[in-house]
Structure formats: C-alpha cells, structure tokens
Image (cartoon, rainbow, N blue to C red; front, side):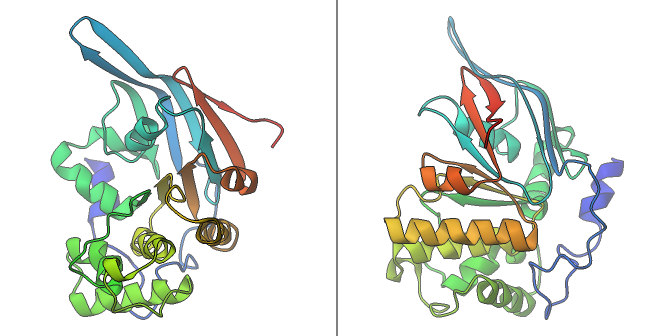
Length: 259
C-alpha cells in the first residue's frame, strides 16, 4: 500500500540521537488537515440475542496541539472509543485516519508498527515493566522498533530531561510513587515523537498534587510542543484546562460549545 511507505521507510524517529524526541522544528508547516479523524465509527458487540451499540456513528476531527477531554458517565464507551482511535480495537463500521493514513486498511500484522510509530499511550495503571528501570521503560518503544540500545537510551534520557524527571532514572517501578510512575509513562508515550497521545484516566490513581502535576505537564506539551493529546477523564481539573471538551453518551459524541 502506498500509505505504508510513509511510515515504514527510514528510521523510526527522524531526530538524531542527540536531538529531542519532542523537537518538532523539522516537521512540515502546519496545515488544516486533522491529525486524527474518525468518520461514522460504530462499535457493536453481539452476544447471542443481545446487541450492544457502544459507539453509534461517532465523528471526530482533532488538530495538532489540541488537548481534548473526553467526558461522560462510566460505562458509556469512552475507553472503547479510545481503543478504536488507538487501533487497539477495530470498529464494526467506520473509518479512522491518523496523519491522513487509513489506519484500518492495514492488516493486523502491521497495525503494531502503526501504533508504535504514530501513537503514544498512557493508562490509569501505567503498565511499566517491573524488571526494567525508568530509563529502560521510557526507551522501550524505540527498542521494540529496532533502534540501537545506546541511541534509544540517549533519546529516552532527553525526553525525561524535557519533562523534568531525571532524578529516578535507575529506579524500578516498585520504587516510584504513583506520580513518578505517571511521569515515566508519559515519557514512554512521548519518546517516539507520536502524532497523538491517548490517555485513559491518567490521573485516576493519583493524589491531588500528583494529578495536578500531570495535568500541568499535558497542558505544557499541548501549548509549547503542539502535542495532540486526547484524555478520557472524570477529573474536572483536566476538563477545565483542556482546549476542547467532548461528551460521550448513548454512543454519540458531542462537543461542548461554550468551553
């Protein structure tokens, strides 16, 4: 496929080992093409005679630099939406474009590379690998993509410098506080310079101070680095500081127009 050449040729990240993985100075000039676009996305689960329409024709356009809060009651499908947008789950119907690539036109065997190159993920429970240090955890997406270990560690260190978290490089996850684990997870999401970061309740298990620090970091990444971030959240502080607020209810996604 012609799209594949756009993401599979060349090194995983075009910045050199000494440059910042957050440095967007070499990217093309901004245009009005959405970095992420969903069109008529449905996700239906059928079990026997029961049909559950979790997503019902969701449409979404997200521009570079948007910090989008996705809100709604528990059980309405917010995580399902995030999984579809992140190519972790295929929609029953509909289309998702990421950097103008038709994500689900790729076979399952190639989707892992699309995710690794184009997306960063932050989850409520962080999913750091217990046997590796902070630095190694942050470098892991690069190592998985085949980047040489020395280069991957240099780039991971640079990202951790950028987000102000270099004091615990050699510590393992069990030695970190919840807030520190969250910052490590954010560093891991950033290291491959993704088009979009998808965060599912990233402040859900954090104390107030740690949650505020993580929100500050997301706002800074959006404002200063023009990083695109979608956050599923029940945290009002996240919603208040997002550039856009979307509500998911009854399978439909609506934007709050007065935010």
